[in-house]
Length: 153
Image (cartoon, helix red, strand yellow):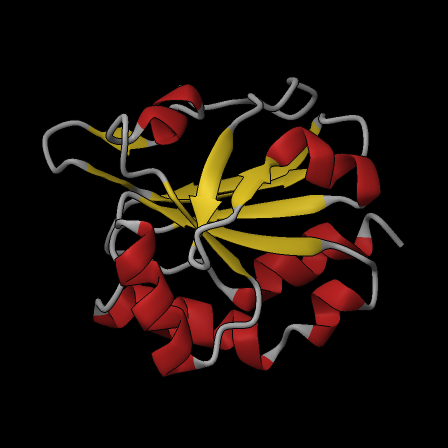
């Protein structure tokens, strides 16, 4: 079972692709945050999903929602991938302790060592307002994000 709507989002501090510290509670105090868990950088489905977010970033920016991708990849791998794909939103590394944040959000797949495809919209009080959890082979549709973001407007 994953986090439910109305639950307090587990706080964390992880490294971004640039090697900077990202603390969720600091971010949510400034604006709502959507966490986008994905299995692995440089994989086709993950790239497709994140490129769709990149290409439609205005739907998030228009309602002042910060997008943060998160995977078990190292911040070095995330840096290379972000540069290659032109991702201007943060990607954070749940590399060590391996998958600790994905475990806290109850989306870590122990048998595979990665997070499944899960997204959480966290409001400025740190409360989960929306979530979607899919298996690793099922991409999240952009329409699901649009619907969740419309509730903020």
